[in-house]
Length: 118
Image (cartoon, rainbow, N blue to C red; front, side, top):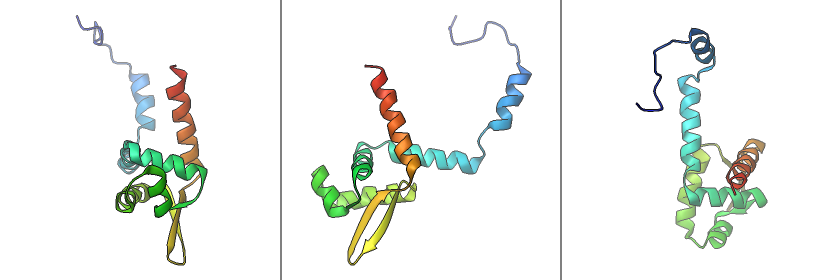
């Protein structure tokens, strides 16, 4: 018998009702999915870690990551769509930064999680 199956079928209505009260609606579910998709790429993670340290333009990020500006711009578009980065224009230069404190928190918790297994 598979250890992941119940030996007998018993419905725990109180648990079901409690979970159903707090289940994500489709809008929030899609936003969370988009967030995790944006965070699933190593290059985008590197960009976010760089932006945690300092506000940077595309040229700066390209040098730091040893990539083309075009490749960085493509990744920044995804990060902007997921509301993970903000931009501001100064003359002809666009500077990027982490969108808000929540992003810092997500990364600090992710690092704690991956390092605690060592």
